[in-house]
Image 1 (cartoon, helix red, strand yellow):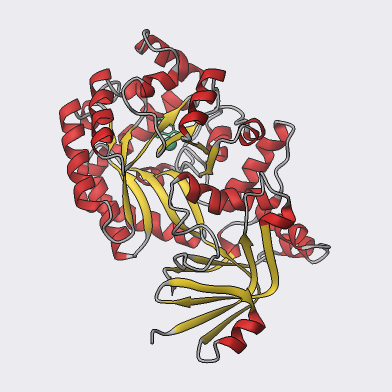
Image 2 (image 1 turned 90 degrees about the horizontal axis):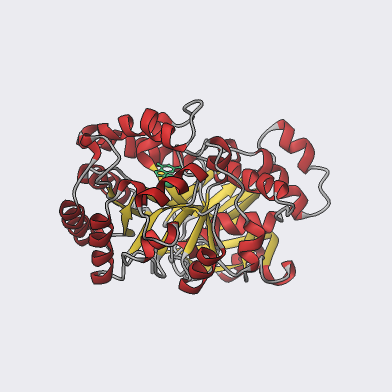
Length: 429
Ligand code: GUN
Ligand code: ZN
């Protein structure tokens, strides 16, 4: 028999989507709960006392008052931007040209790519994020470095080679054919190894010719089992630029749709300035919109319409967008989503924020059958959250009258200090 481990603490489980079900139906909170782990998976979740009595042979790890939750899932990051996060004063296009492209140029060097991949995963895990979906750079070496490191750590992650064949420096461009060939070869090598999946990754329409979008659309047609990630309607200047580059296309989304790059399994980062047609089409395709709130304020992009889009039934994930985003922390990201909701006249409930950062993002990445919840059968990617991690948070949470009021100060003011432990497939890291 494999060894069993029983984690004790407060537990938070989702039983439905809190955007569409009443709180009492959507969430189960146990003041003194337990999570049983066996062979890297969760095998039972329930009352701590019951699990203790039912599994007397299990090794018990008592996390006291801390909260046990599914690890955070960051649905859109750029791991190569780790080293230049928090670069000052530019909006999207200038920010890319000034800070991002020179840094991404370094990732043809496998040693540097490996160093940053390891640094990124260290930071990610310290912040309680156990899965992510990452852009890389144009260099296959950057994909190799990311997946090699993730495989060694047994992480469930998604990534793909970032394809660009125009409007970027020569040292960062490929061609329609090399983008197709390299993406295909990398997907064949890595997709399905360990817990890794591959996403076809055209960076965004302005940096791909129609021929490149066509080639990547064809690849997606041959490999519909892969995800596809890109950017959509982040800034108004960018949308004007797209209109100039693709005069025959109806709107920004159509620059993807026309070339076979709109389907279920598509992940569209930002999606702020959408037309009614774009919204309707994204919904019809059940494509995922990825909200990146710290990035949207940091680069000055605009207000994502969480209320309208959730009411419209869209599939939505939450993400840091490191390093256009200003943080590695999904707690900080939830806080920013709350603040943007307030500016949009619709504050999100703590349960909705936590759901977005775990199950919502896993659902966007279509890996919610594996991760994103404390549920029997799920892989044991679990975090231990201290709800009194700083004096400022502690003095507020101690006067809370219910669990949500105790959790909310950590959402608004918490960071990596709140993450006491992260478990990856049942192993503490
Ligand atoms: N649009 C195209 N590339 C990027 C990027 O690296 N970051 C952000 N925030 N937007 C983009
Ligand atoms: Zn991005």
